[in-house]
Image: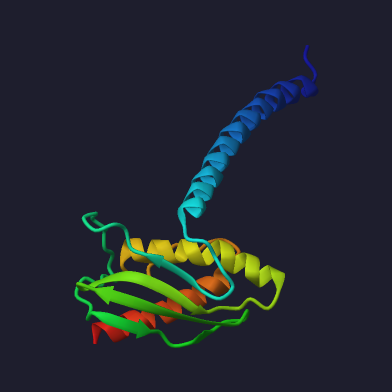
Amino acid sequence: MKGPGSFNRKFMKKNTQNLILGGAAFTAVAANAVLLLTNNLAKSDKVTTANISASSPASGTTTSTSANSTASLTDGSFTGAVTSTNRGDYQVQITVASGQITAIDVLEFPNENARSQQINADALPVYTQEALANQSANVQLISGATEAFNGFTGSLQDAINQANA
């Protein structure tokens, strides 16, 4: 007769193998996500402590629009309101040509300490590129960069609102 421990050992061995296989699958997915993010960052513009900017995709490419579409913006430059966050102030300026956002310049962002510099160096180019691709302030939040997200999107939405007026 088997003791009560034999069932538990068999159960644990089977589930441990599943956990290991699941862990390997998770590791592969995480590695792919890191690779994708690294490739996107490598393609983005260089970050400086004075200015972060990017231009829209080459003409002739089609970009999808979201619910916050900016398809009929007034051409010109529009500076968003300074948006204050717990980490500091953010301000962006957009350039609109042919009714589309063609450039986003981050005029102001916190860079007083190494942590803020690193967060902004990582997040702002990604937010900028995504905003250009979406033609809106609808961008994905990057984990660990919530204040940059709030400041960037707040000022960007104000600039878009001015261009819509």
